[in-house]
Image (cartoon, rainbow, N blue to C red):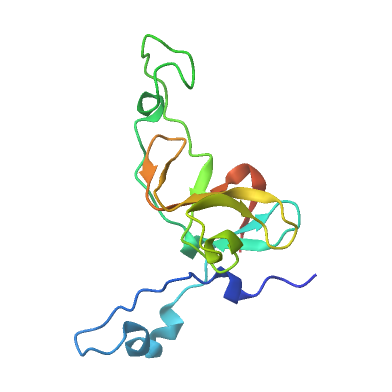
Length: 153
C-alpha cells in the first residue's frame, strides 16, 4: 500500500520569513539540513490509514477553563459548579493543508473528509471554533482524535 505523498501534508500558505540579509530563511538555512528533524508523530485516517497530518502541522492552543467555558449545564448538568479535573482535548487543530478539498473550493466552513476514503475526519471554520477544553481556536481546522490513529515514527 503506497503511503500518501508529502505534498498533501504541505500547508496551503507558507509564510515567507526573511533573515537580516533579506534572504528567505529557508535558503539561508540550507546548510543546517542535518539539524531539521522529521516529525515524531503522524496522524492517519482510521478507515483507510492515509496520512492526514504530522506533528509539524499541529496548531497548539492554550487549555481553556473546561466546562465553565460552555453554557450553563450544557456539558455535565452540574449546576453547582463543582471543580473537576480538566478534560483532555478530543480533537487536534492543524493548519490548512492541500488535501482539504473544501478549503480549496473556497468554503468558509465545512466538514473535512479524507481524500482517500471520504470518511468524515473533522470540520473547519475560518471564523474559529471552541475546543472541547473550552479554548477558542481561530481559524480552526479540527480533526477528531476518535477518527484518527496517532502513529509514532
